[in-house]
Length: 213
Image (cartoon, rainbow, N blue to C red; front, top):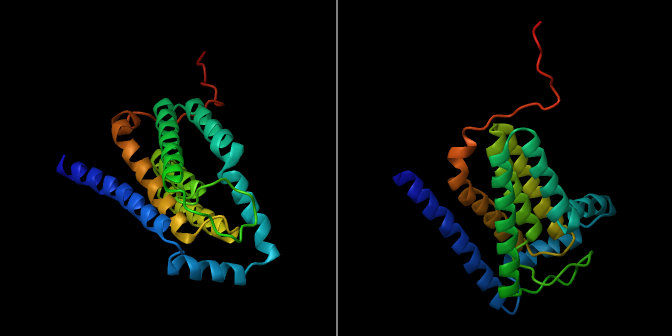
C-alpha cells in the first residue's frame, strides 16, 4: 500500500510539474532558450522529404481521426477481443487526457511559434497530439502486457513530438509537457481499473469452438 501511495504522489506531482512548466513558459515574453534553439535547428534542417510523414502524424494524432475515430475504433476492438474493462479504461484515460489538455490550453493561452506549416487552434501548451500519443502508448502497453509494446509506445511518442516541432505548431517544451501529462493520466487512471483488468484475457472472436461428435 505504501508503494502504491508514493506512486500516486509521484504521478500527481508530475501533473503539477506540467502545470508549473506551463505557467512559466506562458508568462514569459519570449520563448525559453531551449525552445528557441530547437526551433532554429528545425527550421534550418527542414526538407520536403520530412513534410509528408509529419503531415500524416498530424492527421493521425489529432483532429477527427486522432481524437474520435481511432480512440472509438480501439475501444470497440477491445470489447470484441474480450476486454470490456480494458475498453472502459482506455476510453476513460483518453477522455481525461484530452480534457486536461484543453483546460490547460484555455487557462494558459501560450502563443504558438510563428513558423507554422499547418493551421492549428489557439493554445500551444501542452501539445494535445503528444499527450494523446503518450496516453494511448501507456494504456495499450498496459493492456498488451509485453515489453515490445512499451518500446513501440516510446518510439511513437518521440516521433509525434518531433513531427509537432517540425511543423512548427509547438515549442519543444509543449511536447515535453504533453508527454508527461498523457503518460501520467494513463498511469493514474489505471489504478482503479487494475484489479478488474487483471481478470480479463484476450480472446479471438473469429475462431469457432470445435464441437465434439
